[in-house]
Image 1 (tube, rainbow, N blue to C red):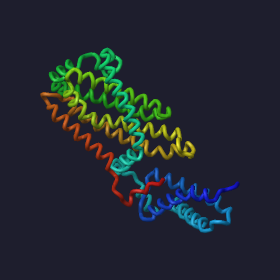
Image 2: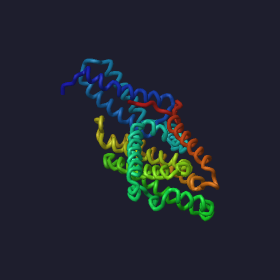
Image 3: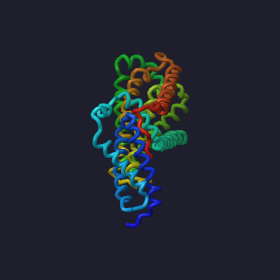
Image 4: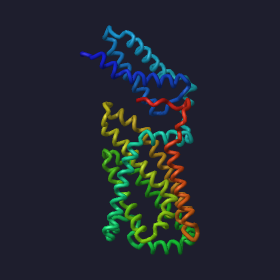
Length: 340
């Protein structure tokens, strides 16, 4: 085999540097999450293979010695970790939710933007369909919203809201919606196995219903009711569904392997921790949204002012955005460096 030594060194040296960074992180007392541990193992195997190639050349003795030292360090780190380091690998739910979940969200932000774009296209389509052809409501609107005009539903809900809450009707309805949204989220993620096509179609379809209902209520002069009804739980529920779509697109990207020379099993192993983190975070967000819907969203005026519910939803949106964008950014010994 003829090897272009200069090109080989230029191509592989960044991977050696990434391995060295991970080893220095561990040497300074840090710990690795599952994705970083898998990255360490992959870089070690790659460095060992590079060493075998480099050993056939008399040139570059310094590079060979440095690589020998690097491979020896990584081998020792992988196969002889001190017992006290195993304690650090235990699962910490709070640390996972406040660090691993938002980091996975930011790391895969491009997939979230695609998920958001597919949903917004659906919202626009549903709104335009409702405005241009009101009879399309029987096709675009879910949950029986096409059966009555928004003003009729508002009068009914405001008249019977408190009574329905006392009899538990709101709680049962919220439970039904929570179950539905959980199914939609799991489906959006699992449809990533269709190379993302099914995920995008589902996000588009979900957006169509939202856009159709929104346009219908606004055209009927019930925009304030709609905001007070949707915002308290929707400010968490809708982003959760988008994040589920994001997880599905991460899975699809691993299957497609665009821009990666790694084999499919390795790509899936690298994507799995982020997919699991995102989908688990979605589950917690949907539980929170279901509780808010049962105890706040379904209470309308005169029980609860719409202005209070709208303000609650806006503040909750800001808090969720800040959490996803900022949580876990602080540097600590427990945060592994990002390898290329």
